[in-house]
Image (tube, helix red, strand yellow):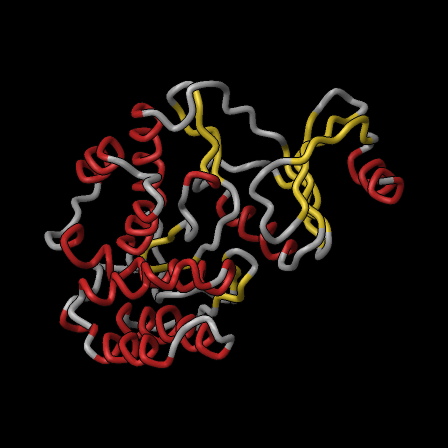
Amino acid sequence: MSGLNSRLERALGARVIETRPLSGGCVAQVMRARLSNGESVVIKQGGSGLALEGWMLGYLKGRLPAPQLLIADPDLLVMSWLDAGPGGFDELAQEHCAELIAALHGHSAPLFGLDRPTVIGGLSQPNSQTSTWLDFFRDQRLLFMARLAYDEGQLPAATLSGIESLAAHLDRWIEEPAKPALIHGDLWGGNILAGRGRVAGFVDPALYYAHPEIELAFGTLFGTLGPAFFRKYNELRPISPGFFEIRRDLYNLYPLLVHLRLFGKSYLGQVKTLLQRLGL
């Protein structure tokens, strides 16, 4: 900690008085630190992609509430501590989240993707800019992640074949949005800081410009976004028919493949189940 203390003192003018580990650091060590000036910060060390994570947080700032970025180096990320308060992600906070995410999805760009690769859970996420959503999702999300999972021994050949068959016929289900939308990209409960009926901030983005439905789908995968969120979001940005019936499952193949690569074959059953629902 002495080296860290020196870096913080030089950058922030304060020393670390005490630290406490925080949950959620699957690719880096995460802790809350109390500083000698009375403030608290969140420190992430180790892992990879910390400078890029800092860049993404800076990109979101002003578009979504997010921590203030204090240090963004390849091996060290320091952010302001956001005190969400009690109550958690209740119905009022879900409605507030819907307002914030709907507004985020109102930010657009000429092409899908981004001007640089990003990361999701520490895994590389390509973003070569593409004029159509179908091509982007097929090549840079679904097939990219499935083939790497296969190469790493996490995805059987038969399941990869099913995903490739799905990818070849995406035009049966995928709709092109009116325009690309900026998404957070990793929208689950652990990345939403909420309390007192409000969202205090969002962390750990994996952002790019996409069809907003992929964001909405991911938000349901682990039960994060519920009826209160979708009622409010639908008022602000109507969701096209067929999303909950089929496209949600299709889009959730991508985060499941991410989790398969990160955490192993415990997620393989869900991948196979979604393929079966899609008739593959």
